[in-house]
Amino acid sequence: MIKLMNILQNYLKVKRIQKYSPENFRKWQNKQLQKHLRWINKNSPYYQQLGKDGLANLTNLTHYPFMNKQLMMDNFDNLNTQGVRKDEAFKIAMNAEENRDFSPKIGSTTVGLSSGTSGNRGIFLVSKEEQSTWAGTILAKLLPNGFKNKEKIAFFLRANSNLYESVRSKKIEFAFYDLLDQFDSHIKRLEDYQPTILAAPPSMVRRIASAVKENKLHIQPIKIITMAEVLDPLDEAYIEKVFKQKIHQVYQCTEGFLGCTCSHGTIHLNEDIVYIEKEFLDAEKTKFYPIITDYKRRTQPIIRYRLNDILTLKSKPCPCGSPMLAIEQIEGRMDDLFILKNKQNGQLEYVFPDFIRRACITASENLKEYKVIQHSVQDLEVQCLVFDEDKRQETEESIRANLMAYLQDQYLIPKITYRKYQENHRLTKLKRIQSNVGIDEVVQNVQ
Ligand SMILES: [Zn+2]
Image (tube, rainbow, N blue to C red; front, side, top):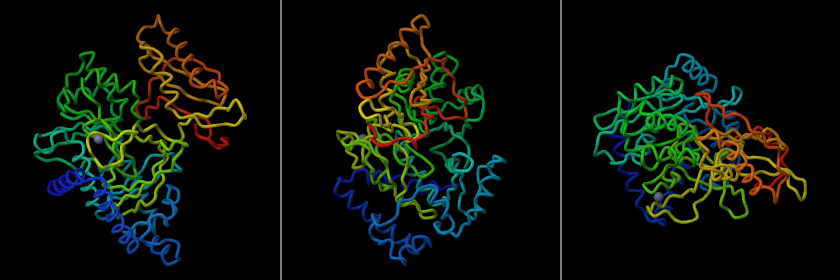
């Protein structure tokens, strides 16, 4: 159990840092980064060796090699600073998963299993102190009234580690909802619990919002936070209408707590715990992959770790005054890029999900929910759930017209097939834009 005192300390620290001027913030951040790199070089055998081989200059981040999941798993034993062996960590994590035990530990280090196909699962290690920093930072950024009022947080997640069970006190309480459970049981528990804060993937929040709208559930959360899936503007609008409030987002993955919305609804990256380099994807330099260096994580260093998420920079500064990088939107994963054939040169090119998304949601007021799946370069599937079935054809035609308008100047338009809307299985992440095309065949150019 994490001590409230530690959380409070982190909370106050976060509040102080958020007020720094941009110059002072960068200075402070650089100092943190240097301190962290020095420590890692002393304590991680992997980086120690790189230093000895002359492959990394320990004071300069840009001299460090890029890291990804594969590399991290391949060098697991030498990377971590606690001498934990990969086979041992895997065994403990797998056992915990099977027994639904949410506190697998080696000593005082928590072992977690990241999602991924069976051959591609990652292991992560987090110490007690790191958990405390994590909880303090997350709460500092998301609690609507600081520690003034008692908050009851209903937290929905795919259960696979004890990271989330760590906070309970007079001022704050978490109730944990397993996404595996039946929706009806969630409704009953929510009605009894009456959370002040609701935190869940957008697809779950949308179902909860529907239940509220249909008078099957009566809750009045003062803050709603979505995470773990891309928040589609269509769902955002629906939920905001039902709960009559702005929705907040947390941007988080196994590799860290990377960002969340401020009081103005802008997503800021958590540069007070993570240093971000950008790998730009377009000539205008608005879209990029983040390369993250977490300067709070010592147990399992995350240094220059390249994520597959596509982020869009916000063009105007956020009025909240935070010195931390503001993001317009999180578009989705690299895997969700569509691939179309360029009319002029016949090359296959990437198309951002955002184009497809906008083509759908601006098509018709009649659209309730949708999915667009690309099966091949020639074949798109569109699934629509509509409010008024009599106007279905009109709605579908309007989506087709929008897709044509967005794409036909540049690309050969694939065949568009309409199918019945498929509800999501409760264990899979909802993706409104999904690509099943292999990315190997693409020549170049993200558009
Ligand atoms: Zn802001």
